[in-house]
Image (cartoon, rainbow, N blue to C red; front, side, top):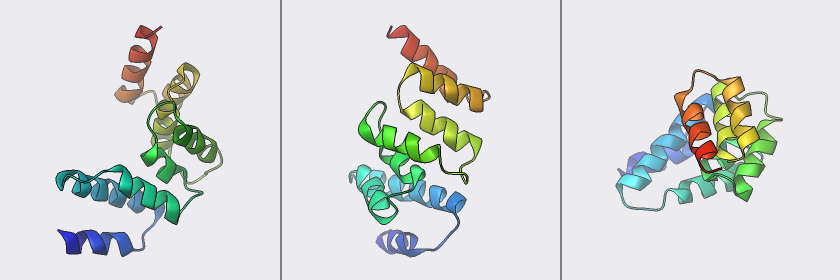
Length: 120
């Protein structure tokens, strides 16, 4: 498992594949009982201008989520679903609604909207 993880850290891919590899690395960390955010922090250090990496690090409403959103608005390589997820993770009601507008088929966005309006 460690050898596979090491190889995944060094592989050169396109942005879409990078996202899948980061998810795989986070699942490997989770399965081995390590902090998943370590993978995200390493990704941010390696590519600080990547909205994808900041999104992985973010938890609703905190500074990394806001940084991810700002970078995502300038990143023309993100697809609508990724951008929608980034809006949703910011935690604000307006951003969640923007995420739904971009990808209305995503059930996660509607669930996030429902839970955020229940908190009001």
